[in-house]
Image 1 (cartoon, rainbow, N blue to C red):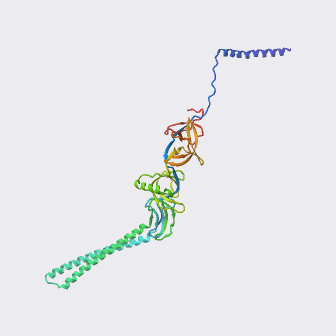
Image 2 (tube, rainbow, N blue to C red):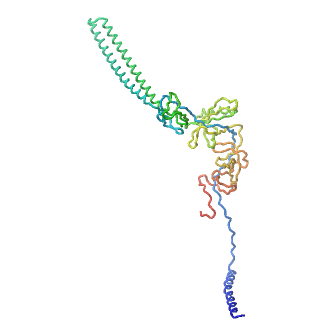
Image 3 (cartoon, helix red, strand yellow):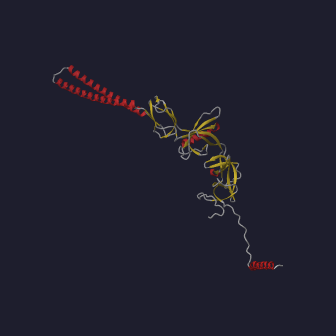
Length: 413
């Protein structure tokens, strides 16, 4: 072996001894230190979702039949012009609302105003004639009085006395005639003023213009159509009801007439699912021979939170049949997925989806068909159910507590 190779082997052996000394020292120290078991990693996952729940109720109710109808304005008019003329201004256009008494269209009034000015002059002349005739009566009365005094002294004859009496009677008749003529002129002036006022076509009630029959510059004859106008403050629901409900409808009419300030027990919904309250009902007692239905007209209480329009489709739920037990849940508990509906029932902290079929609404709740899984007292989610996933963990909270999204795993609270 060469001297160089001997030196390399010696250096490597020395390095090995240096590296092994710390390892041996660590092994000796580990023998003196007790072992601590390491806990397995915790299972990470989202916390339970806070939700508001309500209890399922079971009540005895009469089943309800769904009938269809539409919303109509309580008043609908083709507003006509009382006075003919040329349209000078259109104040309210289609789709614009107007308060009761507001001007819709103005017609030209120049000619009638000229006639009214002439009438004012005629009235002055008529009053002047009355003043003249009054003075003539006073003169005739003085002349007759002088003739009577002269007759007492024998200074006149019967013919002069008769002529003086006749002159007074004629003067009085002429005064009455002039006064009547003045009244006629006054009434003619009032008629002209009324005709000028009629040239402003006004809204008979609060509503909206749906169509115009004339524009600026067009001639409208006396009684001619100006605009189509419908009420916006009062609505009615017209329903076609099967003839077997006629007796029940007449009973509702009697109850409504006795209690005008209270609503009637008929649930009404728009085609968009918004609830309406009926405060009066009347029935047209005539059965259609083809459909075997009659018309029930319900007066609808206006609600500023619900957008109403004439022609809107309506559904009404009329009680029918013997009362039975129905499962009721709040409307907010229903979750729609296309045409399917379900509720989330909370059981042992888990939201379990339960498919349901809605039979009919009952106030703020709905009656369900075939909901055997939902028993009285069961808890269903009414707030926070829009984004729940099936079998998600939930925790009920008070209704006043804010519903916030669950924090992400590892996020600081």
